[in-house]
Length: 299
Length: 288
Image 1 (tube, helix red, strand yellow):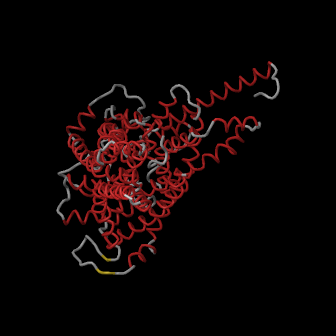
Image 2 (cartoon, each protein chain N blue to C red):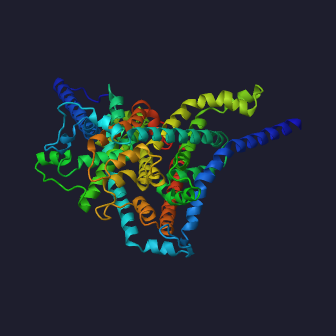
Image 3 (cartoon, rainbow over the protein chains, first blue to last red):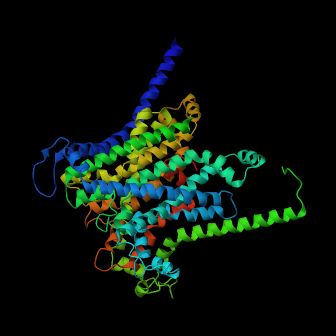
């Protein structure tokens, strides 16, 4: 009897301790993070501007209607999608190639991987500067190198199509190494016996890659694709520096549009609506991440 | 496990194929490395070029002599010193807040599953949200509180960017520590706080330190919030840098020099903490 009571108190004291330790962090999150987000959600139902001292007017879902019928919103949505649909497969392919090349460790391979990874943690606006210098029409090395193989100099940042290509180049440069290391970790986790069994079967290298390695790497690809989607939604600094969304609005992404609506046009209502839309998409992706990545890991 | 006996010729042929394959392999690795290192190389040599060399055709791939005047001018003619100092102040303060407030929450979630899947899902959603979504409400709130253009506005707003990350990553590190350690301490008569402080925390220190390094670098690299929330009394490094391309002339040399300094913390993390880099960037999904 007393033993049972003792156990109950242990469970209770543990629950109390868990709550006490969680509280300071939770309060900070709620005050500094949730508070502003709730306020934003609230603002998305009002016609409200910072440009003039006009009292806010309640508009139900008026802002949402405006956003979803705005061609500029769909343009930004399309641009964000283009970066994903072209960039992610490209980076997966390049990243996989490099991972396969590096999968058998050799002397110095760790150092090569380390150097290869530098783009990932570079200050984002600096990667914007770098590509601005490299792609400079008259003095940049890109046009010079292309000139050596007979390609005419290109106005990389002045033509809509080429500006998008430039963004994709920059994004691919920055994130391919990330894909490589994640896939390298995946490759390292495949037991040697699997390959041995496959080579006993007489499978060629190519068959082994498709029938053995790729299926085993699938969880890693899922992870990479999800993370890249998140990072592309977040991308702001390098695009702001490299093209500023231009020429015109040809490379404007959702986060760039949100910034411009808020801090160039001072339209609080529409900005908040754009923000809510992006936040909802992220909540959806977070759900996917929980189910596809975290749950699998626990098993 | 060869199935048939190979003739001498076949062995020689196989060896030759193997040699060719490994040459191809290393050539491809070299090409990859060259292509991906080139932008960083270009920035680095740019820092040591003299101004005229930026307006040269063909471009200068290797400067005649290495000049340090870009570094000098970045600090004398531009706000390099203030940029470095302010970035350091803001990043340090923010790291202290995020780790200080986050570590207990991470411990609680990692050890006791406090809040269960719901709290995890909540933290992950915040972690995935683009910072720009919070820019407008924060701007209005900070303006009302008369806090714009102060250090506080930055290290507090960066909590929004870094706290979900810090909590999530540290939670993973606490999960790695076996629960038996605490149980043994409790049986020895220590209180829960003592068990945490004397047994769990020391084991978590490496993980906490790496998380702190990440948070510091994210703050150090941050651009959007400093662009929006500060004007002149606070000027972080990223703002100093963006100011160098603002006017009618782009100061490539000074920009490259200061950029080179700006990327140093990130490069240190990459070169010396590679294992943790993968873990951090995959939000703990790959333990590296």
